[in-house]
Image (cartoon, rainbow, N blue to C red):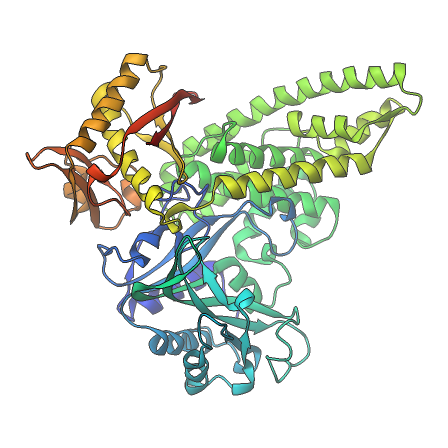
Length: 604
Protein backbone atom coordinates (compact mmCIF):
# COMPACT_ATOMS: atom_id res chain seq x y z
CA UNK A 1 0.00 0.00 0.00
CA UNK A 2 1.46 3.37 -1.05
CA UNK A 3 1.00 6.42 1.16
CA UNK A 4 1.45 10.10 0.34
CA UNK A 5 2.48 12.65 2.95
CA UNK A 6 -1.09 14.02 2.83
CA UNK A 7 -2.47 10.51 3.46
CA UNK A 8 -0.27 9.98 6.51
CA UNK A 9 -0.88 13.41 8.00
CA UNK A 10 -4.63 12.93 7.67
CA UNK A 11 -4.56 9.40 9.10
CA UNK A 12 -2.46 10.58 12.05
CA UNK A 13 -4.73 13.47 12.97
CA UNK A 14 -7.94 11.48 12.48
CA UNK A 15 -6.58 8.63 14.62
CA UNK A 16 -5.89 10.89 17.59
CA UNK A 17 -9.10 12.83 17.14
CA UNK A 18 -10.91 9.52 17.53
CA UNK A 19 -8.95 9.01 20.77
CA UNK A 20 -10.43 12.26 22.14
CA UNK A 21 -7.43 14.45 21.32
CA UNK A 22 -7.85 18.09 20.25
CA UNK A 23 -6.09 18.81 16.96
CA UNK A 24 -4.07 21.99 17.51
CA UNK A 25 -2.63 24.11 14.68
CA UNK A 26 1.07 24.10 13.97
CA UNK A 27 2.96 26.88 15.70
CA UNK A 28 5.06 29.20 13.57
CA UNK A 29 8.59 27.99 12.89
CA UNK A 30 9.68 31.14 14.77
CA UNK A 31 9.47 30.51 18.52
CA UNK A 32 7.34 33.00 20.44
CA UNK A 33 7.93 31.58 23.86
CA UNK A 34 11.42 30.13 23.53
CA UNK A 35 13.54 33.16 22.74
CA UNK A 36 16.83 31.27 22.90
CA UNK A 37 16.07 28.96 19.97
CA UNK A 38 16.41 29.87 16.29
CA UNK A 39 13.48 27.75 15.12
CA UNK A 40 11.03 25.19 16.42
CA UNK A 41 12.86 21.93 15.77
CA UNK A 42 10.40 19.36 17.13
CA UNK A 43 6.71 18.94 17.73
CA UNK A 44 6.99 19.29 21.49
CA UNK A 45 9.11 22.45 21.37
CA UNK A 46 6.16 24.90 21.39
CA UNK A 47 4.53 22.90 24.21
CA UNK A 48 7.32 22.95 26.81
CA UNK A 49 5.43 25.20 29.27
CA UNK A 50 2.52 22.75 29.29
CA UNK A 51 4.80 19.76 29.75
CA UNK A 52 6.22 21.62 32.76
CA UNK A 53 2.78 21.93 34.34
CA UNK A 54 1.08 24.97 32.75
CA UNK A 55 -2.51 24.18 31.73
CA UNK A 56 -3.19 24.12 28.00
CA UNK A 57 -6.38 25.92 26.92
CA UNK A 58 -7.40 22.95 24.75
CA UNK A 59 -7.05 20.35 27.50
CA UNK A 60 -4.76 17.43 28.31
CA UNK A 61 -4.93 15.43 25.05
CA UNK A 62 -3.43 17.13 22.00
CA UNK A 63 -2.18 16.21 18.51
CA UNK A 64 -0.71 18.16 15.59
CA UNK A 65 1.57 18.21 12.58
CA UNK A 66 4.22 20.79 13.49
CA UNK A 67 6.40 22.70 11.06
CA UNK A 68 10.04 22.21 12.06
CA UNK A 69 13.39 23.57 10.88
CA UNK A 70 16.83 22.12 11.61
CA UNK A 71 19.91 23.71 10.11
CA UNK A 72 22.78 22.06 11.96
CA UNK A 73 23.28 19.58 9.07
CA UNK A 74 22.65 22.03 6.24
CA UNK A 75 25.74 20.84 4.35
CA UNK A 76 24.33 17.30 4.29
CA UNK A 77 21.14 18.34 2.47
CA UNK A 78 20.92 16.67 -0.92
CA UNK A 79 21.55 13.16 0.38
CA UNK A 80 18.77 10.64 0.98
CA UNK A 81 17.67 11.72 4.47
CA UNK A 82 18.53 15.31 5.44
CA UNK A 83 16.02 18.16 5.19
CA UNK A 84 16.03 21.66 6.64
CA UNK A 85 12.21 21.89 6.78
CA UNK A 86 10.14 18.88 7.79
CA UNK A 87 6.85 18.10 9.49
CA UNK A 88 6.69 16.31 12.82
CA UNK A 89 3.56 14.33 13.60
CA UNK A 90 2.95 14.53 17.34
CA UNK A 91 0.51 13.74 20.10
CA UNK A 92 0.63 14.50 23.79
CA UNK A 93 -0.83 13.51 27.11
CA UNK A 94 -0.38 16.31 29.64
CA UNK A 95 -0.74 14.42 32.89
CA UNK A 96 -3.59 12.24 31.57
CA UNK A 97 -2.87 8.72 30.22
CA UNK A 98 0.60 7.15 30.37
CA UNK A 99 2.51 4.08 29.16
CA UNK A 100 -0.33 1.54 29.19
CA UNK A 101 -2.57 3.46 26.81
CA UNK A 102 0.14 5.11 24.72
CA UNK A 103 1.99 1.93 23.82
CA UNK A 104 -1.26 0.17 22.92
CA UNK A 105 -2.26 3.08 20.66
CA UNK A 106 1.17 3.27 19.04
CA UNK A 107 0.94 -0.41 18.20
CA UNK A 108 -2.60 0.06 16.87
CA UNK A 109 -1.56 2.94 14.62
CA UNK A 110 1.40 1.05 13.16
CA UNK A 111 -0.26 -2.32 12.62
CA UNK A 112 -3.95 -1.49 12.02
CA UNK A 113 -4.00 2.02 10.53
CA UNK A 114 -0.79 1.83 8.52
CA UNK A 115 -1.04 -1.98 8.23
CA UNK A 116 2.71 -2.41 8.64
CA UNK A 117 3.76 -6.07 8.81
CA UNK A 118 4.64 -7.13 12.32
CA UNK A 119 7.67 -9.05 11.09
CA UNK A 120 9.25 -5.73 10.06
CA UNK A 121 8.70 -3.93 13.38
CA UNK A 122 10.80 -3.64 16.52
CA UNK A 123 10.98 -1.36 19.57
CA UNK A 124 13.55 -0.26 22.14
CA UNK A 125 13.08 0.72 25.78
CA UNK A 126 15.30 2.23 28.46
CA UNK A 127 17.95 -0.07 29.92
CA UNK A 128 18.16 1.85 33.20
CA UNK A 129 21.08 3.26 35.16
CA UNK A 130 22.02 4.26 38.70
CA UNK A 131 19.46 7.09 38.69
CA UNK A 132 16.43 5.66 36.88
CA UNK A 133 15.30 2.05 36.87
CA UNK A 134 15.01 -0.27 33.87
CA UNK A 135 11.75 0.33 31.99
CA UNK A 136 10.21 -3.12 32.39
CA UNK A 137 6.72 -1.56 32.36
CA UNK A 138 7.14 -0.33 28.77
CA UNK A 139 8.76 -3.58 27.60
CA UNK A 140 6.04 -5.74 29.12
CA UNK A 141 3.30 -3.55 27.68
CA UNK A 142 4.72 -3.83 24.15
CA UNK A 143 4.73 -7.62 24.50
CA UNK A 144 1.17 -7.62 25.89
CA UNK A 145 -0.21 -5.71 22.91
CA UNK A 146 1.44 -8.03 20.37
CA UNK A 147 5.11 -7.16 19.83
CA UNK A 148 7.22 -10.36 19.81
CA UNK A 149 9.45 -10.50 22.90
CA UNK A 150 12.60 -10.92 20.81
CA UNK A 151 11.81 -7.65 19.02
CA UNK A 152 12.00 -5.62 22.24
CA UNK A 153 15.49 -4.36 23.08
CA UNK A 154 16.78 -2.67 26.23
CA UNK A 155 19.15 0.12 25.21
CA UNK A 156 21.32 2.56 27.20
CA UNK A 157 20.73 6.22 28.03
CA UNK A 158 22.53 7.34 24.87
CA UNK A 159 19.76 5.70 22.83
CA UNK A 160 16.63 5.76 24.97
CA UNK A 161 16.65 8.86 27.11
CA UNK A 162 15.20 12.15 25.88
CA UNK A 163 15.68 15.66 27.30
CA UNK A 164 14.82 19.11 26.02
CA UNK A 165 18.27 20.51 26.91
CA UNK A 166 20.75 20.88 29.72
CA UNK A 167 17.86 21.52 32.10
CA UNK A 168 14.13 20.97 31.93
CA UNK A 169 11.74 18.09 31.07
CA UNK A 170 13.25 14.67 30.39
CA UNK A 171 12.61 10.98 30.73
CA UNK A 172 13.02 7.50 29.24
CA UNK A 173 11.62 6.84 25.79
CA UNK A 174 10.57 3.94 23.61
CA UNK A 175 11.54 4.10 19.93
CA UNK A 176 9.82 2.28 17.07
CA UNK A 177 11.79 0.81 14.15
CA UNK A 178 11.01 -0.53 10.69
CA UNK A 179 13.14 -3.05 8.78
CA UNK A 180 14.18 -1.73 5.35
CA UNK A 181 16.49 -4.53 4.26
CA UNK A 182 15.70 -6.82 1.31
CA UNK A 183 16.25 -9.94 3.42
CA UNK A 184 14.05 -10.96 6.34
CA UNK A 185 14.62 -8.97 9.50
CA UNK A 186 16.84 -10.56 12.16
CA UNK A 187 14.84 -12.40 14.79
CA UNK A 188 16.47 -10.66 17.76
CA UNK A 189 16.39 -6.88 17.84
CA UNK A 190 18.61 -6.81 20.93
CA UNK A 191 21.39 -8.40 18.86
CA UNK A 192 20.78 -6.41 15.67
CA UNK A 193 19.59 -2.92 16.65
CA UNK A 194 22.75 -1.29 15.25
CA UNK A 195 22.06 -2.72 11.78
CA UNK A 196 21.41 0.34 9.53
CA UNK A 197 18.44 -1.40 7.91
CA UNK A 198 16.54 -0.84 11.17
CA UNK A 199 15.22 2.73 10.71
CA UNK A 200 13.55 4.66 13.52
CA UNK A 201 10.06 5.78 12.54
CA UNK A 202 8.67 7.07 15.84
CA UNK A 203 9.40 7.79 19.48
CA UNK A 204 7.22 7.71 22.60
CA UNK A 205 8.80 9.82 25.34
CA UNK A 206 7.63 9.22 28.89
CA UNK A 207 8.43 12.60 30.36
CA UNK A 208 8.52 12.18 34.11
CA UNK A 209 11.47 14.24 35.34
CA UNK A 210 12.88 17.75 35.38
CA UNK A 211 16.65 18.04 35.24
CA UNK A 212 17.92 20.78 37.53
CA UNK A 213 20.95 22.99 36.95
CA UNK A 214 23.10 20.77 39.19
CA UNK A 215 22.18 17.70 37.12
CA UNK A 216 19.84 16.12 39.64
CA UNK A 217 16.46 14.75 38.56
CA UNK A 218 13.22 15.70 40.31
CA UNK A 219 9.71 14.49 39.42
CA UNK A 220 7.62 16.74 37.19
CA UNK A 221 4.26 17.91 38.57
CA UNK A 222 2.64 15.50 36.10
CA UNK A 223 3.57 12.48 33.99
CA UNK A 224 3.50 13.36 30.29
CA UNK A 225 3.67 11.48 27.02
CA UNK A 226 5.24 13.08 23.94
CA UNK A 227 5.21 11.22 20.63
CA UNK A 228 7.03 12.27 17.48
CA UNK A 229 7.02 10.81 13.97
CA UNK A 230 8.79 12.59 11.11
CA UNK A 231 6.24 12.77 8.28
CA UNK A 232 8.64 12.75 5.34
CA UNK A 233 10.84 10.03 6.83
CA UNK A 234 7.83 7.85 7.68
CA UNK A 235 6.50 8.24 4.13
CA UNK A 236 9.89 7.27 2.70
CA UNK A 237 10.40 4.21 4.86
CA UNK A 238 6.99 2.55 4.68
CA UNK A 239 6.79 3.05 0.90
CA UNK A 240 10.13 1.30 0.47
CA UNK A 241 11.78 4.37 -1.08
CA UNK A 242 15.52 4.92 -0.93
CA UNK A 243 15.27 8.69 -0.50
CA UNK A 244 12.98 11.37 0.91
CA UNK A 245 13.14 13.02 -2.52
CA UNK A 246 11.17 10.12 -4.00
CA UNK A 247 8.10 11.06 -1.97
CA UNK A 248 5.20 13.17 -3.19
CA UNK A 249 6.50 16.03 -1.01
CA UNK A 250 9.13 16.72 -3.67
CA UNK A 251 7.70 15.23 -6.87
CA UNK A 252 6.31 18.42 -8.43
CA UNK A 253 9.06 20.62 -7.01
CA UNK A 254 11.72 18.50 -8.72
CA UNK A 255 9.62 18.48 -11.90
CA UNK A 256 9.63 22.29 -11.96
CA UNK A 257 13.43 22.34 -11.48
CA UNK A 258 13.82 19.83 -14.32
CA UNK A 259 11.76 22.07 -16.62
CA UNK A 260 13.68 25.21 -15.61
CA UNK A 261 17.08 23.59 -16.11
CA UNK A 262 16.31 21.40 -19.11
CA UNK A 263 17.57 18.32 -17.28
CA UNK A 264 14.83 15.71 -17.54
CA UNK A 265 16.94 13.21 -15.59
CA UNK A 266 16.12 15.15 -12.41
CA UNK A 267 12.58 13.78 -12.42
CA UNK A 268 13.44 10.50 -14.14
CA UNK A 269 15.93 9.60 -11.40
CA UNK A 270 15.49 11.88 -8.35
CA UNK A 271 18.09 9.94 -6.33
CA UNK A 272 20.92 10.04 -8.89
CA UNK A 273 24.31 10.58 -7.23
CA UNK A 274 25.41 13.15 -9.78
CA UNK A 275 26.21 16.88 -9.58
CA UNK A 276 22.95 17.68 -11.34
CA UNK A 277 20.99 15.38 -9.04
CA UNK A 278 22.61 16.74 -5.88
CA UNK A 279 22.10 20.37 -6.91
CA UNK A 280 18.45 19.78 -7.82
CA UNK A 281 17.75 18.25 -4.40
CA UNK A 282 19.47 21.15 -2.62
CA UNK A 283 17.37 23.64 -4.60
CA UNK A 284 14.18 21.69 -3.83
CA UNK A 285 14.85 21.54 -0.09
CA UNK A 286 16.10 25.10 0.30
CA UNK A 287 13.33 26.84 -1.64
CA UNK A 288 10.70 24.70 0.08
CA UNK A 289 12.17 25.75 3.43
CA UNK A 290 12.47 29.41 2.41
CA UNK A 291 8.80 29.35 1.40
CA UNK A 292 7.78 28.18 4.87
CA UNK A 293 10.08 30.73 6.56
CA UNK A 294 8.80 33.74 4.63
CA UNK A 295 5.23 32.51 5.01
CA UNK A 296 5.73 32.68 8.78
CA UNK A 297 6.93 36.28 8.61
CA UNK A 298 10.72 35.92 8.29
CA UNK A 299 12.67 38.16 5.90
CA UNK A 300 16.24 37.69 4.62
CA UNK A 301 18.82 39.58 6.71
CA UNK A 302 22.38 39.33 7.98
CA UNK A 303 21.54 38.16 11.51
CA UNK A 304 20.07 35.10 13.22
CA UNK A 305 17.06 33.46 11.50
CA UNK A 306 17.11 35.99 8.68
CA UNK A 307 20.70 35.05 7.91
CA UNK A 308 19.76 31.37 7.71
CA UNK A 309 16.98 32.26 5.26
CA UNK A 310 19.35 34.36 3.15
CA UNK A 311 21.94 31.57 3.15
CA UNK A 312 19.37 29.01 1.97
CA UNK A 313 18.11 31.22 -0.86
CA UNK A 314 21.60 32.10 -2.06
CA UNK A 315 22.77 28.51 -1.86
CA UNK A 316 19.78 27.50 -4.00
CA UNK A 317 20.61 30.23 -6.54
CA UNK A 318 24.23 29.06 -6.80
CA UNK A 319 23.12 25.50 -7.43
CA UNK A 320 20.59 26.73 -9.95
CA UNK A 321 23.39 28.34 -11.92
CA UNK A 322 25.42 25.15 -11.68
CA UNK A 323 22.70 23.21 -13.50
CA UNK A 324 22.10 25.89 -16.10
CA UNK A 325 19.26 28.03 -14.72
CA UNK A 326 20.18 31.61 -15.65
CA UNK A 327 16.90 33.46 -15.06
CA UNK A 328 15.16 34.17 -11.75
CA UNK A 329 13.55 30.94 -10.63
CA UNK A 330 13.10 30.82 -6.85
CA UNK A 331 9.58 32.26 -6.96
CA UNK A 332 8.59 29.71 -9.63
CA UNK A 333 9.74 26.79 -7.47
CA UNK A 334 8.14 28.38 -4.40
CA UNK A 335 4.78 28.55 -6.18
CA UNK A 336 4.88 24.76 -6.63
CA UNK A 337 5.79 24.28 -2.96
CA UNK A 338 2.86 26.49 -1.95
CA UNK A 339 0.46 24.43 -4.09
CA UNK A 340 1.59 21.28 -2.28
CA UNK A 341 1.62 22.55 1.31
CA UNK A 342 -1.14 25.16 1.43
CA UNK A 343 -3.94 22.61 1.83
CA UNK A 344 -2.68 22.12 5.39
CA UNK A 345 -0.85 25.42 5.99
CA UNK A 346 -3.35 27.97 4.68
CA UNK A 347 -1.14 30.98 5.50
CA UNK A 348 1.03 30.06 2.50
CA UNK A 349 -1.81 31.00 0.15
CA UNK A 350 -2.47 34.33 1.83
CA UNK A 351 1.26 35.10 1.88
CA UNK A 352 1.96 33.85 -1.67
CA UNK A 353 2.65 37.29 -3.16
CA UNK A 354 4.89 38.26 -0.22
CA UNK A 355 6.86 35.02 -0.61
CA UNK A 356 7.31 35.65 -4.33
CA UNK A 357 8.38 39.28 -3.84
CA UNK A 358 10.95 38.48 -1.13
CA UNK A 359 12.50 35.71 -3.20
CA UNK A 360 12.72 37.84 -6.34
CA UNK A 361 14.29 40.73 -4.39
CA UNK A 362 16.88 38.41 -2.88
CA UNK A 363 17.78 37.01 -6.30
CA UNK A 364 18.35 40.51 -7.69
CA UNK A 365 20.46 41.46 -4.67
CA UNK A 366 22.54 38.31 -4.89
CA UNK A 367 23.18 38.86 -8.59
CA UNK A 368 24.85 42.16 -7.64
CA UNK A 369 26.85 40.37 -4.93
CA UNK A 370 28.11 37.86 -7.46
CA UNK A 371 29.32 40.71 -9.68
CA UNK A 372 31.19 42.23 -6.74
CA UNK A 373 32.69 38.83 -6.02
CA UNK A 374 33.95 38.56 -9.58
CA UNK A 375 35.70 41.93 -9.15
CA UNK A 376 37.30 40.71 -5.92
CA UNK A 377 38.43 37.54 -7.68
CA UNK A 378 40.13 39.60 -10.38
CA UNK A 379 42.07 41.55 -7.72
CA UNK A 380 43.23 38.37 -5.96
CA UNK A 381 44.06 36.60 -9.21
CA UNK A 382 46.13 39.55 -10.45
CA UNK A 383 48.24 39.57 -7.27
CA UNK A 384 48.87 35.82 -7.59
CA UNK A 385 49.90 36.14 -11.21
CA UNK A 386 52.31 38.93 -10.33
CA UNK A 387 53.85 37.68 -7.10
CA UNK A 388 53.23 33.93 -6.63
CA UNK A 389 55.62 31.54 -8.37
CA UNK A 390 53.26 28.61 -7.62
CA UNK A 391 50.36 30.36 -9.38
CA UNK A 392 48.11 28.92 -6.68
CA UNK A 393 45.23 30.61 -4.86
CA UNK A 394 45.33 29.95 -1.14
CA UNK A 395 42.53 28.01 0.49
CA UNK A 396 41.87 30.99 2.74
CA UNK A 397 41.33 33.32 -0.24
CA UNK A 398 39.06 30.81 -1.97
CA UNK A 399 37.02 30.36 1.21
CA UNK A 400 36.73 34.13 1.62
CA UNK A 401 35.16 34.29 -1.85
CA UNK A 402 32.74 31.57 -0.77
CA UNK A 403 31.84 33.08 2.60
CA UNK A 404 31.69 36.75 1.58
CA UNK A 405 30.41 36.57 -1.98
CA UNK A 406 28.77 33.17 -2.15
CA UNK A 407 31.25 31.71 -4.66
CA UNK A 408 31.20 27.90 -4.51
CA UNK A 409 34.62 26.27 -4.83
CA UNK A 410 33.67 24.97 -8.27
CA UNK A 411 33.01 28.50 -9.55
CA UNK A 412 36.34 29.76 -8.19
CA UNK A 413 38.10 26.74 -9.70
CA UNK A 414 36.61 27.50 -13.11
CA UNK A 415 37.67 31.16 -12.93
CA UNK A 416 41.17 30.15 -11.79
CA UNK A 417 41.50 27.71 -14.66
CA UNK A 418 40.75 30.51 -17.12
CA UNK A 419 43.62 32.49 -15.57
CA UNK A 420 46.03 29.53 -15.49
CA UNK A 421 45.79 29.22 -11.70
CA UNK A 422 45.15 26.33 -9.32
CA UNK A 423 43.56 26.27 -5.84
CA UNK A 424 44.84 24.87 -2.56
CA UNK A 425 41.80 22.62 -2.05
CA UNK A 426 43.13 21.18 1.20
CA UNK A 427 43.51 24.70 2.55
CA UNK A 428 39.95 25.50 1.47
CA UNK A 429 38.63 22.40 3.24
CA UNK A 430 40.55 23.29 6.40
CA UNK A 431 39.23 26.88 6.37
CA UNK A 432 35.68 25.62 5.79
CA UNK A 433 35.99 23.06 8.59
CA UNK A 434 37.39 25.64 11.01
CA UNK A 435 34.57 28.04 10.17
CA UNK A 436 31.90 25.33 10.55
CA UNK A 437 33.28 24.24 13.93
CA UNK A 438 33.35 27.84 15.17
CA UNK A 439 29.82 28.49 13.89
CA UNK A 440 28.45 25.32 15.44
CA UNK A 441 30.15 25.99 18.78
CA UNK A 442 28.85 29.53 18.75
CA UNK A 443 25.36 28.38 17.88
CA UNK A 444 25.36 25.76 20.62
CA UNK A 445 26.50 28.35 23.15
CA UNK A 446 24.20 31.07 21.87
CA UNK A 447 21.09 28.97 21.88
CA UNK A 448 21.57 27.08 25.11
CA UNK A 449 18.50 26.94 27.27
CA UNK A 450 15.19 28.10 25.93
CA UNK A 451 12.00 27.16 27.67
CA UNK A 452 13.74 23.93 28.48
CA UNK A 453 16.19 26.07 30.41
CA UNK A 454 13.92 26.60 33.39
CA UNK A 455 16.50 28.32 35.55
CA UNK A 456 15.07 31.03 37.76
CA UNK A 457 17.06 33.78 36.05
CA UNK A 458 15.86 32.80 32.57
CA UNK A 459 12.22 32.87 33.73
CA UNK A 460 12.78 36.24 35.40
CA UNK A 461 14.26 37.68 32.20
CA UNK A 462 11.35 36.26 30.18
CA UNK A 463 9.01 38.07 32.55
CA UNK A 464 11.06 41.27 32.25
CA UNK A 465 10.74 41.01 28.45
CA UNK A 466 6.94 41.22 28.81
CA UNK A 467 7.24 44.31 30.97
CA UNK A 468 9.70 45.86 28.50
CA UNK A 469 7.30 45.35 25.57
CA UNK A 470 4.63 47.21 27.53
CA UNK A 471 7.15 49.94 28.38
CA UNK A 472 8.26 50.32 24.75
CA UNK A 473 4.66 50.65 23.61
CA UNK A 474 4.07 53.22 26.34
CA UNK A 475 7.17 55.29 25.43
CA UNK A 476 7.46 54.79 21.64
CA UNK A 477 3.92 53.93 20.54
CA UNK A 478 1.50 51.08 19.84
CA UNK A 479 3.33 50.12 16.63
CA UNK A 480 5.92 48.24 18.71
CA UNK A 481 5.85 44.47 18.17
CA UNK A 482 8.37 41.72 18.87
CA UNK A 483 10.54 40.72 15.92
CA UNK A 484 12.82 38.25 17.68
CA UNK A 485 14.58 37.64 20.97
CA UNK A 486 17.30 35.67 22.66
CA UNK A 487 17.47 35.04 26.40
CA UNK A 488 20.21 33.39 28.41
CA UNK A 489 20.46 33.33 32.22
CA UNK A 490 22.87 36.26 31.90
CA UNK A 491 20.98 38.71 29.68
CA UNK A 492 17.95 39.58 27.56
CA UNK A 493 18.21 40.48 23.88
CA UNK A 494 15.07 41.74 22.17
CA UNK A 495 14.31 42.86 18.58
CA UNK A 496 11.29 45.09 17.93
CA UNK A 497 9.67 47.00 15.10
CA UNK A 498 10.81 50.66 15.11
CA UNK A 499 12.34 52.88 12.43
CA UNK A 500 14.47 55.23 14.53
CA UNK A 501 17.32 55.03 17.01
CA UNK A 502 16.03 55.51 20.55
CA UNK A 503 17.14 58.68 22.31
CA UNK A 504 18.84 58.53 25.72
CA UNK A 505 15.68 60.03 27.18
CA UNK A 506 13.51 57.28 25.66
CA UNK A 507 15.85 54.56 26.95
CA UNK A 508 15.74 56.08 30.43
CA UNK A 509 11.94 56.27 30.25
CA UNK A 510 11.66 52.57 29.35
CA UNK A 511 14.01 51.61 32.18
CA UNK A 512 12.00 53.70 34.65
CA UNK A 513 8.70 52.20 33.47
CA UNK A 514 9.95 48.63 33.91
CA UNK A 515 11.53 49.36 37.29
CA UNK A 516 8.34 51.09 38.44
CA UNK A 517 6.45 47.91 37.57
CA UNK A 518 8.98 45.92 39.60
CA UNK A 519 8.63 48.29 42.58
CA UNK A 520 4.84 47.89 42.32
CA UNK A 521 5.30 44.14 42.98
CA UNK A 522 2.64 43.25 40.42
CA UNK A 523 1.22 39.74 40.63
CA UNK A 524 0.95 37.30 37.72
CA UNK A 525 -2.61 36.62 36.56
CA UNK A 526 -3.41 33.89 34.03
CA UNK A 527 -6.61 34.05 31.97
CA UNK A 528 -7.90 31.58 29.39
CA UNK A 529 -10.22 33.43 27.02
CA UNK A 530 -11.76 32.95 23.56
CA UNK A 531 -9.26 34.02 20.92
CA UNK A 532 -11.79 36.26 19.16
CA UNK A 533 -12.34 38.20 22.38
CA UNK A 534 -8.60 38.57 23.04
CA UNK A 535 -7.93 39.76 19.47
CA UNK A 536 -10.51 42.51 19.88
CA UNK A 537 -9.16 43.67 23.26
CA UNK A 538 -6.82 46.64 22.68
CA UNK A 539 -5.15 46.11 26.06
CA UNK A 540 -3.76 42.71 25.01
CA UNK A 541 -0.49 42.50 23.07
CA UNK A 542 -0.07 39.59 20.66
CA UNK A 543 1.02 38.53 17.18
CA UNK A 544 0.44 35.63 14.74
CA UNK A 545 -3.04 35.07 16.13
CA UNK A 546 -3.92 32.69 13.30
CA UNK A 547 -1.69 29.94 14.65
CA UNK A 548 -3.34 29.84 18.07
CA UNK A 549 -6.32 27.64 19.05
CA UNK A 550 -9.78 29.04 19.70
CA UNK A 551 -8.96 29.48 23.39
CA UNK A 552 -5.76 31.34 24.32
CA UNK A 553 -3.75 32.11 27.45
CA UNK A 554 -3.20 35.72 28.49
CA UNK A 555 -0.56 36.51 31.12
CA UNK A 556 -1.05 39.78 32.98
CA UNK A 557 0.79 41.55 35.80
CA UNK A 558 -1.49 43.55 38.08
CA UNK A 559 -0.49 45.50 41.19
CA UNK A 560 -2.38 46.10 44.46
CA UNK A 561 -3.96 49.31 43.11
CA UNK A 562 -5.55 47.41 40.23
CA UNK A 563 -3.15 48.71 37.55
CA UNK A 564 -2.21 46.31 34.75
CA UNK A 565 1.48 46.70 33.86
CA UNK A 566 1.42 44.06 31.12
CA UNK A 567 -1.18 41.92 29.31
CA UNK A 568 0.20 39.62 26.63
CA UNK A 569 -0.59 36.47 24.69
CA UNK A 570 1.99 33.84 25.74
CA UNK A 571 2.55 30.26 26.86
CA UNK A 572 4.83 30.91 29.84
CA UNK A 573 6.64 30.33 32.07
CA UNK A 574 6.64 33.59 34.09
CA UNK A 575 7.71 34.70 37.54
CA UNK A 576 4.85 34.99 40.02
CA UNK A 577 5.60 38.53 41.24
CA UNK A 578 7.53 41.37 39.59
CA UNK A 579 8.96 42.48 42.93
CA UNK A 580 11.39 39.55 42.86
CA UNK A 581 13.01 40.47 39.53
CA UNK A 582 15.73 42.90 40.63
CA UNK A 583 16.71 46.11 38.82
CA UNK A 584 16.20 46.36 35.06
CA UNK A 585 19.00 47.97 33.03
CA UNK A 586 19.33 48.50 29.26
CA UNK A 587 22.94 47.92 28.27
CA UNK A 588 22.67 48.66 24.55
CA UNK A 589 20.22 49.83 21.88
CA UNK A 590 21.17 49.37 18.23
CA UNK A 591 19.93 48.54 14.74
CA UNK A 592 19.17 44.90 13.98
CA UNK A 593 17.94 45.25 10.39
CA UNK A 594 15.87 47.70 8.37
CA UNK A 595 12.94 48.86 10.48
CA UNK A 596 14.02 46.69 13.43
CA UNK A 597 15.87 47.84 16.58
CA UNK A 598 17.62 45.66 19.16
CA UNK A 599 17.89 46.06 22.93
CA UNK A 600 20.26 44.18 25.22
CA UNK A 601 19.28 44.33 28.89
CA UNK A 602 20.00 42.68 32.24
CA UNK A 603 18.46 42.26 35.68
CA UNK A 604 20.84 43.35 38.43
